[in-house]
Length: 348
Image (cartoon, one colour):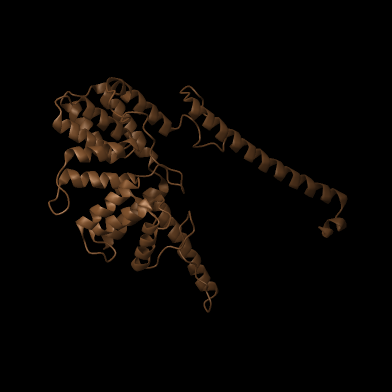
């Protein structure tokens, strides 16, 4: 800072004012963000449906009446009567947790079969578009390093955007890492190994029995989608793996549905529809699932409307929230990723 001594007094004053204003703006932004988050938390805790949205620029997703909260309000009101009528539902129709968000882009995660990736390092579920963008940026940086330092480029390893662990370069490295995580009783590690056995991926021979055993361990450790996989095994039945047991499958589906699994809610509706004379509970399950963006549940609601089992008001309301849930799962980056993926598949 010795160079300031040689400057005229007016220049020193200008520099001082510039830094003062910069720090003032930074402090104001941090304070505004803190107040927005505090107001949002207080609003959610009080469950105030009449709370107004914060108008500060930095608060874009933390407000009480975001589209996700509006969908939750619909789900609560649509299931309130069923919860009162069924005292033995064991919390199945209690407030449904919202769909999880991608911790990178902070948008609602797509359904598991439509663009999500479970990281083998930390078990976090990210949208595939964010994983692809992270890999693309690292590849571009490596290309620039190669062009600038051809003799010693010092290439960067691809890392997880959350825990910053390096991504395994080979399937053998990934399997070794997952088995190490299994020794630490990580539920996601059992689930991912089970998927590899189920579909015969990464050099593992297809083995449905081993897949079921790994899913069962993951379900016992609390993995939501492992409970869905176990339920599907009991629903389908396989003499070599497990006998068909609808009651056992229903127990796993109920446990998964309580934690917000959309597919489990759809299957519960299908079981209710096929086994009970009263179809109202089935359409309640499908209405909740459709409000999360499940297309199969929305198709079931539409069939019920065509058959006269669902009123027009209920059908339009579910359709509106189904569209809103799908809009929440879309973004320019995700659309671009899926478009590029389709182009590559067509070229092949």
